[in-house]
Every structure is written in C-alpha cells, then in structure tokens.
Image (cartoon, rainbow, N blue to C red; front, top):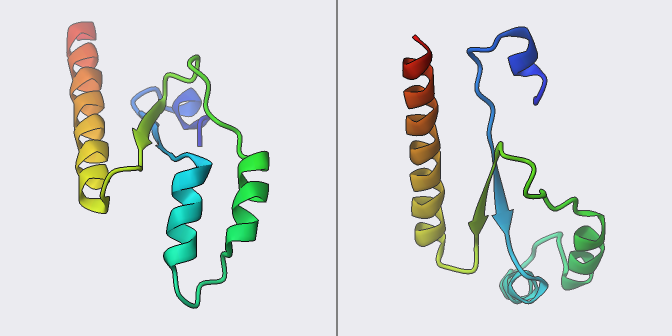
Length: 94
C-alpha cells in the first residue's frame, strides 16, 4: 500500500495504528465469550507485532485503552487533522 504514491503522487496513504498494552488486551480478550482468540494468543501476537517507529510519518497512532467511542472519535479526529494538513500542503504547491 505504501507504494501507491510512487505511481501517482496525488494518492495519500496513511495508517491508523491501534496501540494497546498487553494488560489492556488481556483484559478485553478474557471478557469475550465464545471467541477464537484466547488470552494465550495475546503474547504471541505481540511478539510478532512490528510497532511503527517515529520515522514512519504515515502512521497515526491511537491508544485504545479508552472506550470504543472515545477511540473512534480520536481516530477520526487524527484522520481529519491529517487530511486537512495534506490538503493545505497541496494548496501551497499550487
């Protein structure tokens, strides 16, 4: 997905990274009923997770320890802010 702008510079690609501690993930997984993902899988999933670094400026990080509605609102706010910045930069180039 990151190569899309190479072929068309008008394409803007950003990723929303949902960040959570192991503790938060374990709490949520153990509350689930009849779900395939058990608590034992959390550790192995975190071990292979490649956390985005600060040099990856196309990643918007959202802490998911808040409620689902708060997380959604924060993610939407970050996306809107980023889009406004991108549009502003493009307007300056014109």
